[in-house]
Length: 158
Image (tube, rainbow, N blue to C red; front, side, top):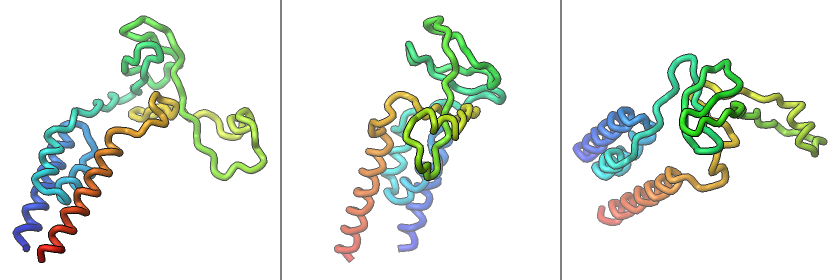
């Protein structure tokens, strides 16, 4: 049993190393490797590369017209897309309200919570596919139910 735990821990560490090299969430892949063992390592190997972080003093913006991602200096309010040459303002993410009572209009909400400019590596809240279930959410559900199934099989076999 101790060997089983050591092998699963090693699989978690290997998954963590692979995920961090691919700019993915390292701790999530550690848990995936620890819970699923060699299958977690395979998932880390097959995972696509993540987006690289923005350099220091820059932020990542996405063109509204062609969806091209590019780095823009933090102080710039407008940018020209390198691909389609569209000049557009930098979108900002608004702070989320905490228990707003009595405010029914969007303008009141915006007056109370001024815009919060994107950080170096954050994305705007109003990005595309806002309400769509993301691929990682589906993978997380499959992993959780797979881990529960493996634990149930191990418990029944013992």
